[in-house]
Amino acid sequence: LSHLGSSVLTSMAGKSSCVAYRVVLLALLAWSCSRNDRPCAFSQRRPQRPLVLMGDKMGRAFHAKASELSKDYKMTAKDKSLTSRLADAGKTADWSTVKQLYEPYAGRAPPVYTAAMMAAYRCGRYEEGAAMYERMTNYNVTRDEATYTVSLKIFGKLSCQNTTEKLWAEAKDANMVNRFVCAARIDAAAEQGDIEGAVGVLDFMRTNNLEIDKGQWGSAINACRRSVKPSYFVALFLFQEMIASNIKPNIVVFNNLAGAHRTAPLDRIQHIRLLMSEEGVKPDRVFVEVYLMSLFRNPPEEKLSSLHNMVLTMEEFSSSHLIEAADVISEAKAHGTPLTRMVRGIDRALQQVLDM
Image 1 (cartoon, rainbow, N blue to C red):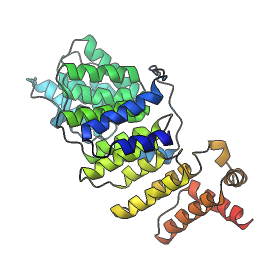
Image 2: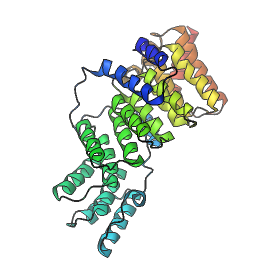
Image 3: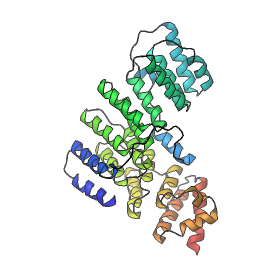
Image 4: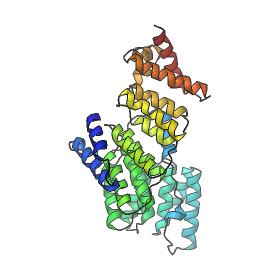
């Protein structure tokens, strides 16, 4: 992949953005052609450390309000009140109230279903949100941009790749794709580690003159990070395209970029710190941990479960890797950056290994 990435980036020089995106897609197809579609399985979720989850949450916040998404439907006063109450309950993650308000509803007002699904999403009740969407379709309730935005995010969380692809195709066929729907589709691709899907949406947005913002670039890079086959060269390409679009990256973008480099050679990982310095972005505690995990190839939990196991893990790497890790931690300490428990453990292990 590293050789392929170098070839792809070289071939992009002087080409238009849309052509460059298509070159990336062809490169992705070269290694993903044997990929089996992952079925919708609510229980099949890749384990992640809580800190990594926090970083992802920061990068993919639900930034669209129901009022921004929903059309101006003619609703009864009762439906309007119910929509508002569901939205309020969702904002406070009050699932019991959401359930109490939604379950008796037998109407057909689309904003009610949208508000209920959005509330389910905010409460982390993704399976219940999926059931709401199924009920909406069974009742033949009108679907709009808001419906597709929320449902894409829900089924993305559930790792239902086939369903998200179907919803995206339906939205395009119905001419119901706006920037919110695109953002939700990219978020779903990020949840599933679907690099091809994320890059495909960016290509669609470019082709249709839809603005690509910082969150969408960051989410697409996150797809590279979460992929079973992480692609640091595509992540770097997306980062470079973001900079070329005059969009300044934030720390969340760099967290995802660092996470996408867990199979990269040392010099490519070190290059991330140079990019951060050039952009004037300071590392936070999430970045320090993610960066170290990429340096050490994202070792399994058992290799980090104790100081002894951490020391054994560190001994598997070159002195250059160890010095880089120590330098990152030392810099974080110098700048007063809080260290996570994981990083503090790695710091102690490094001290032992480097003193040997």
